[in-house]
Length: 411
Image 1 (cartoon, rainbow, N blue to C red):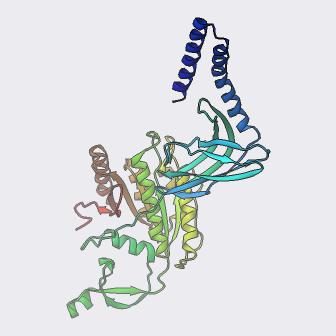
Image 2: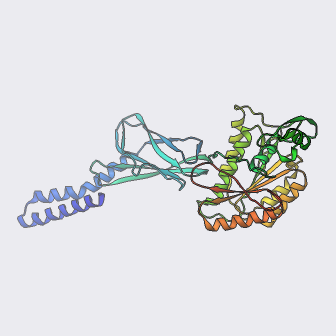
C-alpha cells in the first residue's frame, strides 16, 4: 500500500509538470514540488516520532507449553510532543508465535506513558531468549514507516506440560505397570507383619499360598516398615537433533515429566538423570504433602525444559556414573525413543544390583518408522528379561504404557 501511494504521488507530480509546461502555469510547478516533497516530510515525521521514546518489556519468567500468554510493553514519551501511529513487533523464536497477524497502532501523549500487550502462544518447551524489539512509526499519510530495533534482553522458560497417565492392571503379569509402580513407590521390607486380602497392584510374588488354599481367596503377605521409594528417571537425550521440532524426543521429555508428576503425587522422592547435565537428587523422601510436591516437581520440569539432544551423550554411561542413586530398593525408569545393546546391558546390571528397573520407549502415533524402531528395542529388552513398555504418543489424551509381552516374563 505504501509503495502504491508513493507511485501515485510521483505520477501526480509528473502530470502536473507536463500540464504546467503546456499551459505555462507557474503555480502548477509549485504544486508538483509540494507533491514530491511529501515523502521526505513524511519520512522526517516518522523519524521524529521515535526520537526519545523509552520502551520497557515485561514478561513471565515461566510458561507452560501449549499455553497462550502476553508480553507487556511500557512506552514512555518524555517530550512535550505527542507521538502518533506507533507500533511494536517482537522478534520471536520459532517456538513462540504471535497470535495477531499485524501489530496494533497506538499513540503516546506528551510526557506520558502507554502500556500495550502482545499475545503469543508457546508452542513447545524450551528456554528461549528474547532480545530484539522493533518499534515503528507511520506518518499521518501512511507513505513511510520508520523502524528502529531496540535491544531488550529477556528470557522465558517454557515448561513441558505433564500428561495424565493410565496405569492399567495387567492381570497375572510379573512386571505389569501397576505392580511396578506400586513397588517402586512404596518399597519393600523383609519383616512380615501379617496376611491380608489381595488387592489390585499387589505382586503375585507376595501371595500367601497357604491362606489362599484354606479360604479360596487370594491373600498376600504384608510387611512392616514400608518405606517411601527413591525413583530415578533416566532420560536418553543421545542422538543428533532433528531440527527445532524433534517430535520423538519432545514426546520423551513429556513422558519423563508425566512420570515425575505421578511419582511425586504418590509421595516418592524423584531424581532426574540426564547425560551431560548434573543429576538433580533428592536425599530425603518427598512427603506426600500437596504444598511441598509442586516445588519439587517444578524443579524437575525446569530441568526438562532445558534439556537438548546431544550426539555425544550416553544415558548408559550416565547410569553407570550414578550407581550410588540406584541402591537396593530404588527404582530406575529409563525413557528413550530406542533401546540399543548398551542401554539394555546397563539396565540389566542395575537390576542385578537389587534396584527395580523399567524402560519406556516412546512412539509417535501412526509413525511406521518409529514403530519399527520401538519394536526392535522392546524385543531386545524383553529378550534380556527386562520389564519394558511402549508408550504411544498422541497430540492429546492420557499416556497409557503398554507392556511388552515375552514368554517367561509376562505369563
